[in-house]
Length: 391
Length: 96
Image 1 (cartoon, each protein chain N blue to C red):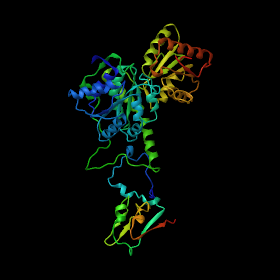
Image 2: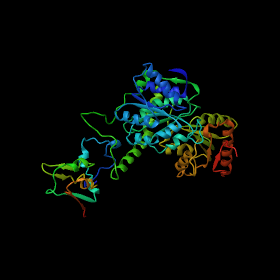
Image 3: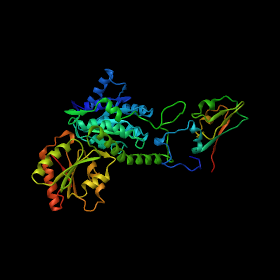
């Protein structure tokens, strides 16, 4: 293995190159631009055999990906923010037609007002589109999950598109040391895709036919079943990947949860900051813990219940707002997951970092102290804390 | 839609709504939402084929001396009756 200095975007592009992708159709949009920019360089330099399709919009990008995927090709695309919003219609087509496309998403805010910086508004807006959603904490994870994403997506029982999410700019543009595999090791780990159906004039098939009241529901039920199979497949893939890299992945990562009384659960890069603050607080004898969720869709209900069911107080970090909802998306899911757990924690929601607003260790320390106070008193002072917003 | 056969459930249907048999749309009759049916008067028909050209589906069938209607696919739009220069096609209300 070799450590290479690269941005999160470059790490994803490098992984895609090693995954021997047949087709990439993408439209550059900040901050994912570097993913496809770097990949187009691989194409231009003859380092890959990929058909690179320059399309005129993200809607077209996903449309082209769907078509390519249905032929049996391995397909990658990337987007962000407004681009993902423009893709929205086709996201449902990709999942409905069971196309195991992998997409890198450099998460950032949605307009208006116009903003190019990181938050999770884009992917949370597409959370019911039937895509598997994985969130990376850093460049290393973005690389590793991209390699694993193809294997999960293309598994016979899954056959669903997978998004690998990385925080815009914070991960997409920061250079880190990324421990990459040899090309051969990736080829060994990820074999050529075996599609369920292929386009063959000797054995014609139809994709995308009309399904009215008498069939549509059955195909949605199939998608539910495919989502349910993701957890088991992901577990198997992660174990195999650990055998190759020594790196341990699964649906979530827990820190300090063996004895934590107050905990934070979050997605993406914030987990690193939270863990560092938790480490300092634990050195002072404060029983705090951090849960980083790698897999957000399908939501790992059992694992979340097992790791969080016994803490006294829990702060759920949402980097997006679900306007008019009781909580942010992640918090609503956590509350749902825990609602049958005996002695479940007191929960409050922390909405933070919108439009790329920085989250400081002192912010997280404040939340840990609030959670410890809740653990002590059993009282939630504020159901939703808007962390760092000016009054 | 008109078929009375028992339909398969989600466990046995091909993944992602793929249709594995070519030409199966021939079994899918689409004429059942017609409210008026075109009826051809063979005596008046001069076989000019205006109706055959104007039919937005392919529901007008050419015969040697007149036309017939394929009621499996005719939606009853009435364009054939409107365009017929000899008023050989009448729209008759469908009765239950």
